Length: 381
Length: 138
Image (cartoon, helix red, strand yellow):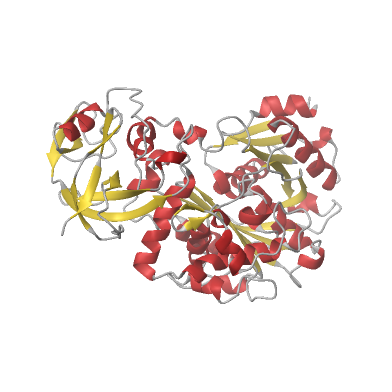
């Protein structure tokens, strides 16, 4: 992808809670209104909306927001973090560069408390119904637990190293009053967390969250006229592998080979940067193993060293590479990808109070999405 | 150790020959009826020969564990608290590397699954239906 001239100018979030009284549409609309206000715009300024295949359609969303003007619309056809932190920005850049829209709204929400729970849509897959559910291989924790055991077999992984991911993200969450879980947690507390699927405890898993986030994308030129410091999309890469969602977590020849190296290489190339240029990172931590693997793919450390990188404290407050500075998905809230991107924007604006990384100018956002992966590099101009 | 009880859903008949094989103590895998290439999980369309059918071939009942996890909290729909813990293994038959069969590990006393462990098919009944299961080869 060619060098981008787009910026993120507004962000908004609902509260992140275990079970909200509000519908998904209510949460999407609330986050969207906040993002529009934060960007100094009005509802009538929005001329583009990018949704996701797992959320409400853009026409429903526009109707509930009172957007009556003609808008450019698109839907990201990937899952999770790739959709909200990569593919949506790629579509926004295309639309803005082509002159199809000036101010694009990108919302995403989740309702883990909805009937059927967060695994219901995976359960609809016929192959899972015939081959995986009968042997109890069901629910994301089990899939990522098997990945963790394979990682341990190939590279070595102590219990303390595994725990260090949860402890790092929780340390950041204690600095974030809006985090869903922000009580301090040490290794003894971690060991009290119930085992879900060995070796993953509840503390190694993302939270169950009801909530939504949204952001506004415009050209860097227009962004200069808006209230906040300009946060530019300097680099963006997307990688995929050739397995559908229904198969990728069992049949990928190397289960640890997420397509993150390709996305990172493309993002660094587009930004003309290297991992040495990063001040901090936000990493899609659906499970501790996902964060370990993506820290390696981002180039923060060598292959097989991600858990040791965490265990050395490098991602902690005061560490050399702060990671998931709002608490991430494991302690902050699980609104796939989008709350990580919003945190990146706030850090680059210098708005994070006690959790602020000093002089943060470059932040990578790593977004896993099943069989896809995005790396996005944001900079403060 | 427990056994999960959650019958195959069989939205279609696609996977029935796999379970019929287990009833006979056989491990079967889906292959292209024209060229014989294995396709696992069985796809709706065989991209090598779109006009071909799926042919179920009996493969070696021995293989290795690619990875595993012991489920201590079942996330299956419904109440399955009485069925945990059980250990799920991803098994690669010696005949078809990289094609993984989610299965149950039948542990002997004190035995734990490991990556790379050699195993042999040993199907197990779970209520009315049969499940793919393997035990360690001594």
